[in-house]
Length: 406
Image (tube, rainbow, N blue to C red; front, top):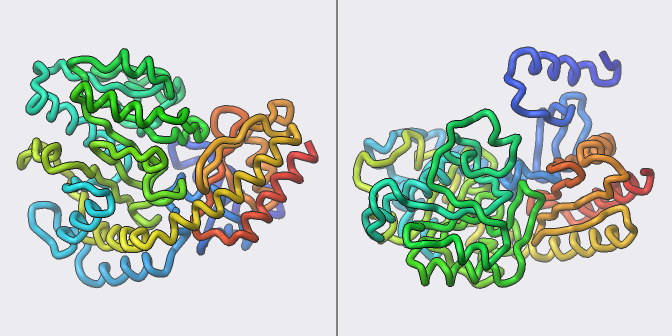
């Protein structure tokens, strides 16, 4: 056992002994956090450049969000949807207004919201479009990451997420991401929806070619299918706009939201769409005990209020321009093969000669910077939107030094 990190090593060993090994986290044990900084059990501070996969867009323990949660904890936290509660109407109304939509169906996790979107599209297809029973098709993109439920991994192309979990749910057509012609060819008479991430996060922060989302909007409108935007990671300020779809002036038929909607405090997700789409549900056809609970609504209402000012979107755009400018200079040195992203979100492909993204993440951790690797030699950079520019600059300097050392 390391003498420098005795408590860390003990806690990790205990966790390994008593938990399922479905994650391979970096060897750091966080005890406290505030803003963009986290502190481990040994008292060492780290700058968070992952932000809980965008669940922490507003940073750790934002005072407004913590205050909203504490106030609601003193009143009521759960009623189930068997009864009304006094935060639900405002939550649905204000979230719908933020999205430019009419109706909200609240859930808890992002995967639950995606499952809800799939069910909505199928039910809409049968009841409104007139697709024959059990013949609805949904078009999705290769490289997608929409969650880990059985249905969702059925249309994943990631072997690690998919293999061993069959038999798989039918009804999905997979096309290359960013390929307009392939998308056009896949949308047929029995297609009820096209489900896309406006930017593919888990795949390495892949931004589609210009005009792709607009083409998806045009194709679905022409063929009578719904366009569903999974903005669980890309939405709510991450890319410099409230929604990543806005970069192409696209308004989908349905937003799938999660992660940052819960303010980094608790899981909150939702499907947001028109009344005409969501009215296909009737009492008993879908639900969730915790979906739309008072505590979740109180926190999410504060998130919506914070986004309504545009302050966080602007901060993401401005700091994002700085981030991508610095990363472009780093790419010019040859240590980085490619940089992608928008706003405070970047996928950085490191030269394979350097080693894996995991190695780079570990070396940065030693310097007090926390990032996460994906797909070999790629790391993702997605700091909280509240990060100070000088802190971001310091983190990028650590990245330069690590890469320079080889």
